Length: 489
Image (tube, rainbow, N blue to C red; front, top):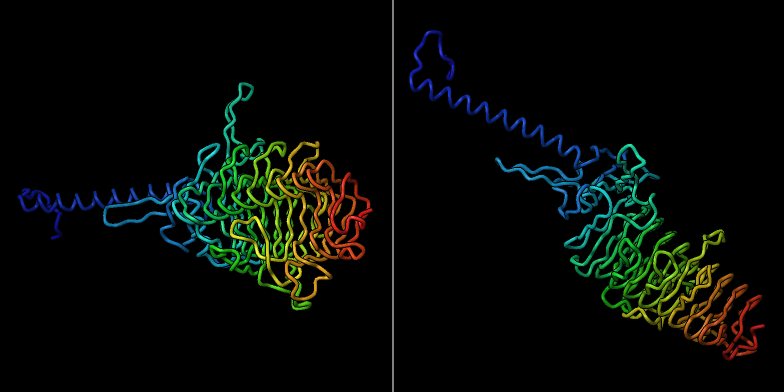
């Protein structure tokens, strides 16, 4: 006779009642637990969006919380999850940290595809405040803050509706505030072939975005300001650092393996403690000629750097707007084919700098070095002004090429800059000068408009008649200076 089964007509003796009650309680407990787990599975299906994946699939996760919790089961194909310990259960929502952790533990997606991180945290502007450094991103991924929804309510509509944040105009709805994250970068891209868009990234102890890999797109972000694009909330170092290594605390003793073919496009990069954009490949050279700094083929175009979101008022970066350090063949204001999409670069201590030395710890100077930096292009930018002629002057030169002694830049020459093309720029209102060719060699400086600068509009420091084999053609200017001023027609 089974426990808990009472035969017909039998009296319910105490031992039978007790056994029956225990059985019913056990069955009820199991039923409650089953129903609870079913309910949790439904909830987590909504919280942790993203199905389990195999090695041939790319995952899509949707961040639903501003919390900073990590993923409890990395590599299971789910963002967030549940942890059960006895009768205690803890729900982990899909957070940005959890999404990055999960993606890092998944198999690489099929070549040419990317994992995706979207956002659906309530409605409107939301701020994520990491309590420590976010994980370095080691897989190709699209992080798309523009997927965050806003709620529209209007008397002319039948009811409220939602639209993606960026479609309403204005700034990003997803903010990353690094005030509590220590001396870390905001996002670190080490997996390559990634896209970061629609984020406001500020208050980090290092750089807003550190690009350590190839073929990444940084597009449509506010870096160094909040979502309004009006107030400086500095990342302590740079807005965007393109450098294939982790810099030490002293950049003068560091090296950067090359990070190639990255595009920094249509961002607001302002208010940062040092430079807006730094492209650094210190320590790497071409196989031939071995004295030429490695070609990195990065593009910086269509950005507002050192201004507000409208490109009409100043929100300065502390050092350079854009600086290229020991890296050859990069494009400021165009793509590799020469299609111009210039930047507005204003209000910074320097506008654009290209040098063959090493960036100082403060980011304000570039000295030493023993390689030649060549074939960079600065095309079609507004430096110290914008398309409407606003006064957005930088604190020193608008464009500064080099800083060492050229004389043709033989191997071993320090801070050697060669064969730079500077064309079609408007360089005006800068405090100490417009375009300074500080002993660079073989430059092609053409079709620029340089007016109303505090110092000389055009300055050639290579002495006449040699003039560093530079050519100056079709430039519009008022004043010129330097030992080679006679070389400027």
